[in-house]
Length: 74
Image (cartoon, rainbow, N blue to C red; front, side):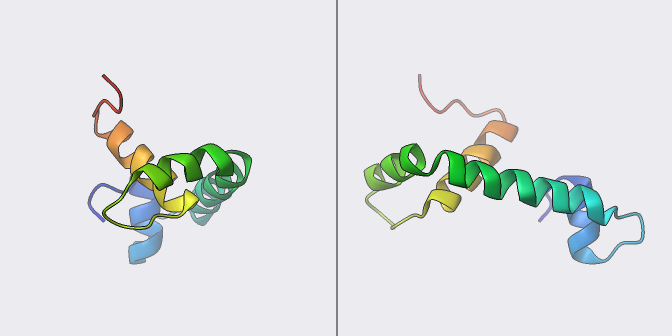
């Protein structure tokens, strides 16, 4: 939770400064991109052998790593 964007944290945790529309916009963007990029995300998911991942889980992890400045491919 601490790594979530402030608007998402505030909305999820019920803080009064939350703007629910920002959270909705973020979720709509995420779901839309899972649909658009489902096949490439599933290709990446299939390379991960330790745990079975869905397309949404792959995008989630890519976003978290990217937002923290990690490099995916060297």
